Amino acid sequence: MTEKKQMKLGLAMFGAAGLNFKSWLDPEVHLEDYPDISVDVKAAQLAEKGKFQFMFFGDFPGTKAADNGDMQTMGMDPLLIATVIASQTKHIGLGITRATSWNNPYEVARQFKTLDAISKGRVAWNAVTGANGVSANAYGVSLPSSFDRYGKAAEFVEVVQALWASWGEDALKLDHDNQIFADYDKVKSVSIKGKYVETSGTLPIPPSKQGQPPIFHSGGSSNSVAFAGQHADVYVGEVWTIEQGKAMRQALSQAGVVNGRKPDAIAFIAGVMPLIGDSKKEALERHAKFISEDTFYQRVAHVGYALGVQFTMADIEKPIDSEILDSVEITPYSDPRTENIIRVAREGWTLREVVYHSVIDYHPAAVGTAEDIADHLTEWFESGAADGFWVMPDVYETDLKRFVEEVVPILQERGIFHTDYEGETLRENLGLPYQYGVRKED
Ligand SMILES: Cc1cc2nc3c(=O)[nH]c(=O)nc-3n(C[C@H](O)[C@H](O)[C@H](O)COP(=O)(O)O)c2cc1C
Image (cartoon, rainbow, N blue to C red; front, top):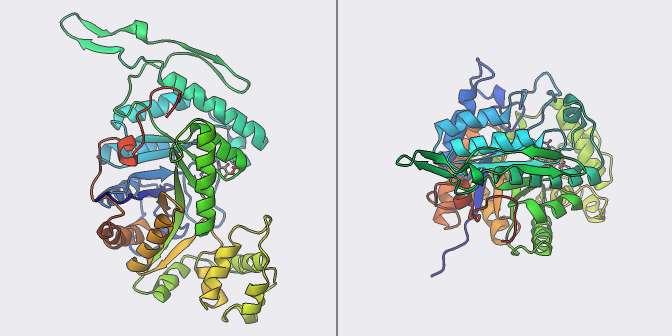
């Protein structure tokens, strides 16, 4: 019997008590010592207990929370948080974002190879261009056009990978008899002068257990997909329907093939917000506690905008009229969340409950019992919409715990999620080939 394909799970980590900005208000969360690294470590250990293949750290330097009731996220540097987590875990991978638009490639190469070595091959670099002008300004630069962002990103990754390979794979000797630590003829200086970045020097760190970190990438535009085709092993993206997921996977596959790679070379990881409860209603009520009045009304307006109507207060406690839903025309300019809004609304929820389904968010929600959430993941995975999921629980202490204790066992029983780590390194656990230096061919 051939083994069923296995989904990958990654935990979204933004250096807070959960993905919801109000997660700090959950009675189970104790943040008297904010910022408190032990909260992040505990979430990582919980995800490792659930055999998540990786954690995914975002990075938005320079930004501050929008509302006095919101928790600040990513105030601290994710690379440093991940370093502490690496020392307190054994298996889970650590995918960390560092944008190419405002960082320096030598610095990135050095930090990631150091952490990859320390963690014995559990690190990935999420090489994003970054689209946030506030972050760029904090680094004293302004954000260039998409063309230049991706032009620079491609050069940046090649410089980083060339630096990673500047220590020859077999340069380390540790030969006590002949007192030879390393063959330094095999440690070569890299000299690259590109249009956007340049370097001249060596990075004297031997390969980690996985050679070097795999490349993750997150974006959405065609430039981003083309960049991934050449450089990425894993793509974390925003899609709201199974059809959108399938199209994204197909686009990534084609972008890889154009670059001489195998059709399944790039794993597509879709975001999902698991809203878990003993019933759908209860899950929605719980999630509603984390949405402020202001945000709620902004989202009502947004749903109206996507559907081409202006809702009034009288509409909020009623299901959305089916005539409105029938008349919506989806065009390339529609909000990409529109089809998901319509799908949820057709289930007969009130407008208030439709909003509580997180239809106006960065990623779709899976709502209900552990079984409902497992069904959502199974359906998306088995229909080819994603190779895995970037899981965003509202609160780690409560929602992640339930996900690990209740959803993961169902996926394991269905034979679509592993029951233990396959190997020691992140590459082994993601099924990615060993790589050292700039990619040549798969
Ligand atoms: C899932 C996901 C995670 C992202 N995380 C970050 C991040 O942590 N830091 C950042 O500066 N940008 C982040 N971005 C933004 C991307 O860098 C990208 O610039 C943005 O999505 C715009 O897409 P485009 O570059 O394809 O136009 C993320 C995007 C996605 C889809």
